[in-house]
Amino acid sequence: MNNREEIEGLYPDSKMLFADGFDGAILGVDTNPWTKEADEGDNSKERVVYSVRNIMIILMDQGMEYEKAREHFDYNIKGGYVGVHTPIFVEDEELSEELVRTNVEEAWNEIEELDTNFNELHDFDLINLRETIHARIKRALSLLAKYVPDTIGEK
Image (cartoon, rainbow, N blue to C red; front, top):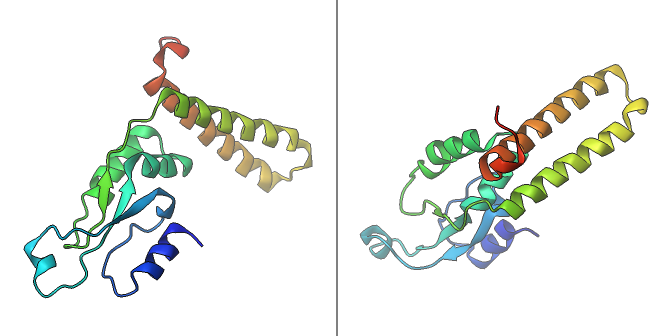
């Protein structure tokens, strides 16, 4: 069971809205009414609370560079007001150097694992492998350049 399923079980009559694809970024539920509409005639006052930091990680894991992920989040996710039950997005913390290094290390380990299995691949798999490696390297370099600029020489 994930956070979303647990929340839906705890609040079966709620009208709260979820940001699809970001269940891993759920922090909890806000149960405080915050508008007049939530107090008058709408007994469901709950809203799902999301971690912006974790949403950014999910988007980058899908292959987006940080800047594109942030733009996508700001415009398409945070900017999508759909009424009083719109989720809350908490700017919980910036991506830390430690988190960046962890993501880079994970990407590097995946690349090494792919390289180990390289000889067992077919032509179609080689194309997918190349694309996967390219996306991982771009993400790793993007994270390093943004958050740990002294680890990459001047371009």
